[in-house]
Length: 584
Ligand code: FES
Ligand code: MG
Image (tube, rainbow, N blue to C red; front, side, top):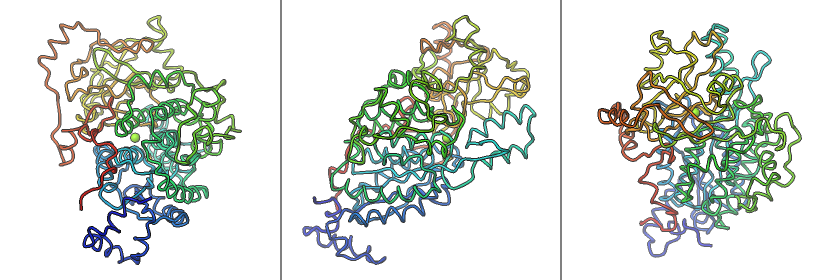
């Protein structure tokens, strides 16, 4: 097999260029014989840095990745990627997913790299890497850095993010003070690793495994466990063989693999952010994923993972219970998975899952005795938007009793809209008595989509006013054109597309309008006539803040809606680009 890196290092037609390509790699001791040996050059996309603490474990793990690559006869070359730290990057890390994607495409295409290990962890690092691997289409394998150990506080499990949403309600209700709030939050992060709940990071690394893009059982190994560097070693060994097998992402990430992933996410009670991320990866690899696929293939899947925010436990215990393969084993036995999908192991998913049954039934439920039935996302549409999703696995009994019964229809509810223009407006006014927010209210936030924010923000899981929390009303229905954290336990209506900033219907809403949501029918409508909506639309001018950075301007000019993965639409035409070599 003649690898693409030969065109750089072993090209008799361009000896001058080959000399230039070779000579500078000598300066850390690499020899010309090594580079000209014909062995594959394996890139290691390093996402760890001081600015991305969730992925920082990769700075150490990479040593074992290199060992594995050398052991199998490859040549490792590590390079940095643009950092994405979910909790810290303003105005949102979501803005950077497409930037990391873009830059990774350029590196994988423009340098002598034959195959790549994608180090992942924090939320957007996994989709960015898989999107780039999809566009370039050289052999690629995902290595998760793994979640943190389980967090404990006062004898109770405290999970990433989820503890924040729960504690802020307790703080507002006067049940805890500020010091207790901070203590519980800090205790949720006891080690290196990414979020230990089934938030977006754990969900997306599980999706990488469900798609067949990482080694079996690798996604949820806690970052400090000895199995983690062992998995790094095996990943390094395997990618070299994949390079010789020419086992590229387009052979693994098929439509069947994506439908498997949608089902696994439902059984995990996984993050709502999986919807735009999987959609984005599918579009870059050229697989058609329809918006209704979430409901048609995911909704009837039961919740099997007893992991926060939908359940009680955290990822360390989940890993010991069998992790993602044990969940997939349940789905496979129940006939819900396509076991024939090819994976990075070179074997089929069904072969990978043999013998992976869980022995901890407190944490991983049998398919026939789930935590909840019908745990996937519902897809909604109506006169306010063409697409939105709702995570049904987190609808609590209290929420059901309060909303889903009062119209005499257990699937529908109505309420009075209270509209906020972005999160600053929400924080400024949520406790204003003049808004008259009560149990009949539906909180709406707009200006939070890809163009509006920009990047789309995790702000839709709005907390009710303090006065309601003190009365024990922990959540109100919420609707928005942004997202919510994967660690949130709110049954919000999310990702409303098109967003208000590009003329979507949420922009036409006034506080006081009545909204009717019918989960059974998958509809959400403001109870206004078409004439009234048309009259409002004629006068409507979206509120959009100015661009603050060059990237914001470029991003806004080409980004699509959350329904379509919020990708750079101009990038979609580029497929399998490594088939052609870049010019010298
Ligand atoms: Fe990085 Fe959760 S904030 S994984
Ligand atoms: Mg998040």
